[in-house]
Image (cartoon, rainbow, N blue to C red):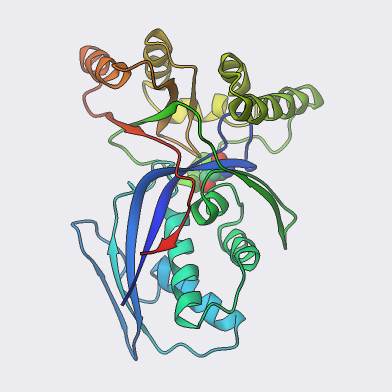
Length: 295
Ligand code: HSE
């Protein structure tokens, strides 16, 4: 069996809707080998589809098809540390695992660029799939066929504190609440902040991050789908976060925090408990610069 390690991801980063994403240092694991039957099991207590509707299997099959190879089955074993439907890239992790695993089984016929393109075609947007594959912070434009991307490794003294609620929010629902059209003014509001965010993160001008995560394309609409989100933002800023934003389609909220703010996570936990938000889990994470790898 080959074993694949796939990082969690956080997309959008505030204003960079469908364009910016980064990888985080907690991981799903997928073991895979060729088989004559579809044999899929979860190695933890998370229920996953065990038939051909499994997203890892679908993605592996897509790669076999692209390479002109027949697939009669696969043995897949999944360990699912990335919480599902929380805006942490669990679907992208499955897609990427299927593609990277199948590519390995076939002797690596496809390049990293090919995998980034194929993953975006399956998912529909590249801002989770590309950082899951590549690691670091990824800026990506998907033209419908091809992804034009830049990966940058990040070595800043920042932690990305994930504040994960105990309820799911499906991406379809979180996209359905968005307006079909936005004003020119709102478009400029976002593109200027997305550019400011990545330039500031990469040059260490962290005092700009709070402005950089402000957005008029998705977060104002999604806040209504995440009860108590406003309180979580306020608590994070009160404890000195540089910035806080809805991760991907939500409902997880990420606080970007200086490493020197040593007790942020404990203070966050304490304040959430005091506010009656015991169901929200707080995890301290960092950027993963490596992306998906066979281990
Ligand atoms: N950019 C996507 C969204 C990420 O916000 O809907 C979730 O897949």
